[in-house]
Image (cartoon, rainbow, N blue to C red; front, side, top):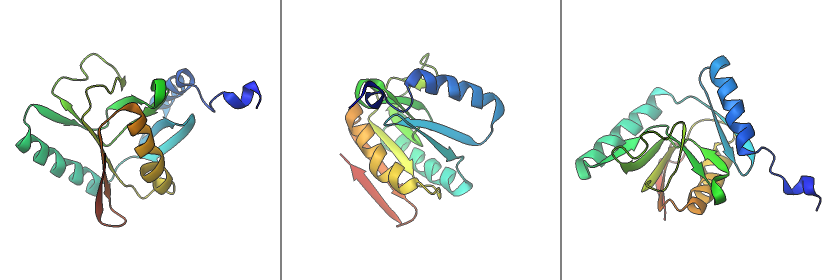
Length: 155
């Protein structure tokens, strides 16, 4: 294996710069960096937003000291080399204050993903993200799967 093969497809610093540029020129596209690969997602639809709203209400009723932060970027994977933007991150109120777009995930108790109707949702939400969140030490990954009408909890 050569030194080039050892290098991830995209470094976190390159990803951060790319997202800054795209934020000024593109609307409705969300970028993530998982396993050194750039992933794009379309913005959520109304049903997607409604599911997050419902889950936020449940979380607040059960644990009012926690908040389900929608779309907070997290530094994920071993050594924080990835960047993911879960649909929700359950953490104590104020956990991400002052951390910017890509926050440290140490205070996150659970991440939530609601499947989209993208072509790569199967690979991203059911394979790559469960592994990335587990590597990061996030204890719970909740997948709300609109394709199969199932909720899966990864511990």
